[in-house]
Image (cartoon, rainbow over all chains, first blue to last red; front, side, top):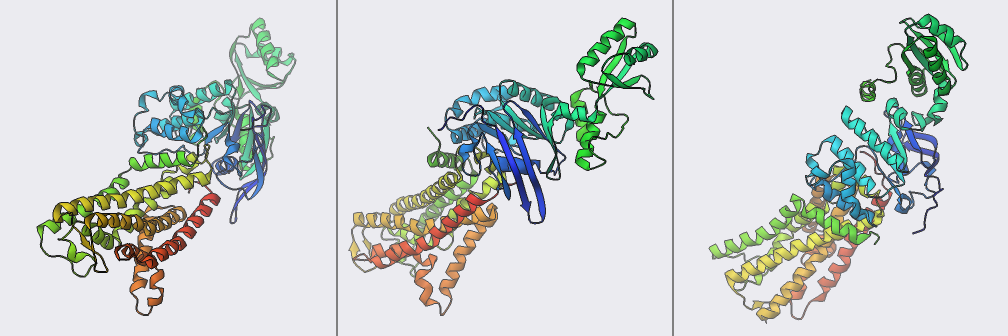
Amino acid sequence: MPRVMPQAIPIEVRGLVKRYDDLVAVDEVDLTVEPGDVFGYLGPNGAGKTTSLRMMLGLIRPSAGTVRLFGRDPQLSVKALEGVAGFVEAPSFYPYLSGRENLRLFGALDGGGATARIEESLEIVGLAERAKDRVGGYSHGMRQRLGIASALLREPRLLLLDEPATGLDPGGMRDMRDLIRRLSASGMTVLLSSHLLAEVEELCNRVAIVRSGRVAYQGSLDDLRAQAGEEYVLRTTEDGIARRVAESQAGITALAARAEGGLSFKADGEDAVSMLSLALTESGALIKEMSPRHATLEDLFFSLTEGEGEPGIARPRTGSPARGDDPAARASAEAAR
Amino acid sequence: MNPGVLTVYRWELRKLRAQKRTYLGLGAAALVPIIFAVALAARSGQPEDVAFGRYLHDTGLAVPLVLLLFGSVWMFPLITALVAGDIVAAEDRNDTLKGILTRSVERHQVFAGKTLATFTYAIAAIAITGAVALVGGILVSGFNSIVSLSGTTVSANEGLGLVGLSLLFYLVPILAVASIGLLFSTVFRNSAAAIVGTLMFSLLVQLIGILPGLGAVHPYLLSTQFNAWQGFLRSPIDWTPVVRALWVCALYGVPALIAAVLVFLRRDVAGD
C-alpha cells in the first residue's frame, strides 16, 4: 500500500455533475476540503447533498467531473477510500445480526486491524451495552451511532457524514455533535452534510452552501458572517449611557435603538465587542445582554438557498432566537420549519 | 491481511446461516426425501413410468435417482432460486450495499464472494437431499444392487458410486439456474421478483420442451440437462448427454454471470 502523504488534500471535487434524465441533481460542484477542516455541506433537502456524497464515496458514477480523496479517484478502486469512512443517508445494517456482529462483518471487509477496534468503537459511541442485541430492534439514534462506530473501525483521517443528527431527539443531537467535536479534535477531517444552519454553525469552520445542485457560497463561516454583517443586541441597566459609550468606541458601527428596547450595533471583530463590554462596565451601564444576532446569517442562508434577494443583502427578521439559546431547541425549531 | 473474495465469501455464509430462508431451502431439501421414504415404506405401489421407479422397493439406491428426476421440475430450481434470487437483492432491501461497498473490498470481489456462497448453498441442498434419500432409501428398501438403464445389473457398491456421480453432475444444471438467479437478483434488485423470475424461466424452458414441432431444440434446453446424469447409469457410460450438458449449461450460466457482474460493477448505488 502506498503511504498517502499527510499534506494530500482530503477532498478535491472539480466540476462534478450528476444528471438523471432531465433532472440535474448535482451541477458543476467544486469543493476543496483541507486537512483538519470540519466542513459543512449545507443546503435544504433535495439540494443534491447526498448525491454528491455518494459520488465522493464511489457509490454512483458522476455524469461529469472528478473526485479526488487524498489524491485518489474513488471511481477506480476502493483503495481511494483508504483512511476514509462515513455514511450516506441513514447508515444501514443487517437487521438479523447483532450490532457487534455487524461491526465484525464491516471490520472484516476493512481488513487491517479493524476488528480489533470494535469494542473501543462501541465504547466511543456508547453502544457497548446493547451491542449483543439484533440491529432490527435498534432505535434510529442507535443505528446512527452504530454508523459512526462502523466508520471508526477504519481509523479514518477523513470522515464523511450525511445529516448525522437527522431524526435524533435533542439529547441525541447534542451527543452526536459532542462526538463530532471530539473526533475533529483528535485530528480527523470531517465533511458534514446538513440542512440545519445551527448545526453547521456550531461545528464547522468552513462551509459550502448548496442550492439546487449548485454551490452558492464556499468559504469560512466568519467570512460569510462578515459578508452578512453580524449584528449584536445590547441591553443594559442604563441604555442612554450605553449609547454614548458605544458611539465613542472604536470598531462599533451602525448603532441603533431597537423597537423592542435596548440597542443594536455591528462590530469589527470580537475584540471590539470585548472592549465595549469593558467600557460599559466602567461607565456604570451594566450589561444585561450582549449577544450576536443570528438573523442576519440565517437570512443570508435563506437568500442563498431560496434565491430571495441578492446574497449579502440581509432581510430583517423579527423574533429570531438569539445566540445563547439552547442549541438543541434551536435546531429542532429549525428542523420543524 | 487484506480482505478479498474469501472474506466476503465467509461473511456471505455467515449471513446465510443467520437467515430463515436458508433453513427453509435446506429444510425442504431434507424433508422431501424423508416424506418420500416414509410414503415408500407405507405403500407397496411404485411409479412405473419414471426411470428407476420400478426398483424403488428393490434397492435404496433408486430413491435419490427418482428424486433427482422428480425434483428437476420445480423443487430444486425453487430451492436454488430462494437464495440465488435474494443474495444481491437483499442488500438492496436492507440498503446495505452502500455499507459494504465503502469498505476495502472491490465490487467484483463482493460479487465473486456472493456467487461462491450461492453455489455453496446449492451444493449443500443437493448433498442433503442425496444423503437423506440414500439413508432413507437404504433403510426402507435395503442396500442392494441396481439395474442400469442398459439392463445390466450393477453391484450395490458400484451403484453407490454411480449415484454419487449423478448427484455431483446434477450440480451442473443447478449452478446454471443459480447463475440465472444471481442475474435476476442483480438486475431486479427485488428478492421476490428474482425468485419468481428464476422459477418462471425454469418452467418456461420446460414448456418449450414439450411443445410439438420443437424437438430439434430439445437437447439444448436447460431443463433437458437435468437428465444428463442418466448417461452414467448406462453401461458403458454414455458420455454424449454428459458432455453436452457441460457446454449447454455453460452457455446458460456463464453469460448470465457475466451480465450480472457488468450490471453490478456499473450500477449506481442510490437510495432507490
